Amino acid sequence: MAINTESFDFDPDYLRKKYREERDKRLRQDGNEQYQEVSGEFSYFVEDPYIDDAVEREAIKDEIEVVVIGGGFGGMLAGARLREAGIDDFKIIEKGGDFGGTWYWNRYPGASCDIESYIYFPLLEETGFVPKQKYTNAPETLEYCKVVCEKFKLYENALLQTEVISTDWDEESLRWIIKTNKGDELKARFVVHSNGPLNRPKLPAIKGINDYKGHTFHTSRWDYQYTGGSSHGHLAELKDKKVAIIGTGATAVQCVPHLGAAAEKTICIPKNSVFY
Image 1 (tube, rainbow, N blue to C red):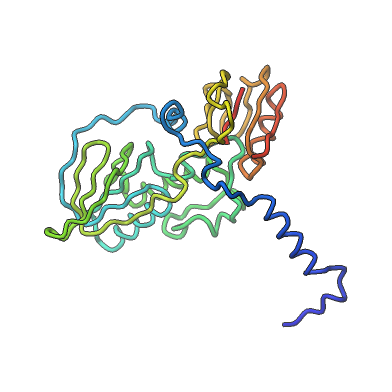
Image 2 (spheres, rainbow, N blue to C red; image 1 turned 90 degrees about the horizontal axis):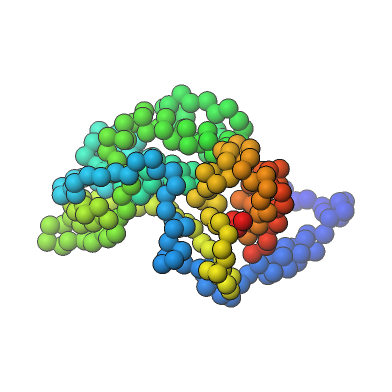
């Protein structure tokens, strides 16, 4: 269907040009070089603050049908479909302390999804779950992850707090050899990669960042012991603090209102670590 734009106060060429100008402002030639790698003295930024008890277990040496890497929605769906197909000989390996993927890590105040719940949540018919909001928040999403895992008994097949360090094809046995940081060595006929592309925080490569003496953490590892409150806000421990948040994307848009309501002063710096 053709639309006559002359009847509207609208110039598509101007709008296209404007979008390109704004895009060009954000394109950077340094790419990932603009970020500080979370290793060495910065390695604490990737530690899991949500684990109550560290898993201590013997290393597993086994041969199984399927290994699923990652416990987010992709890994949960793979496990659920395997179970539905009558395949129970599988393991889901997840480095976090529970299922949830990005929703396990991102529990910052105000975190929510910008896709309608009934579209974003898989397996709603199978679980009978009814989202409470049109656009759900992080706590409900994490709750739903547990519903899916319990429905399909995924915890029985899970290796949590475990990170895959290598996957190698063995031509002689025609099997994948999967090794983990727990010393596990699994032989699998199939490997399903559901580990996601953005599973490590990025820090801004700001000169002198390692000299900063205040308290810092990344939004994907929110330190509620320091700020108080929960994913719903009420960050009471920040009442006498000055807070700077680096980044102005969706995460900042969601958490800054809660920081602003609680802290003595909040500064949002374009360029997601939080500094006090």
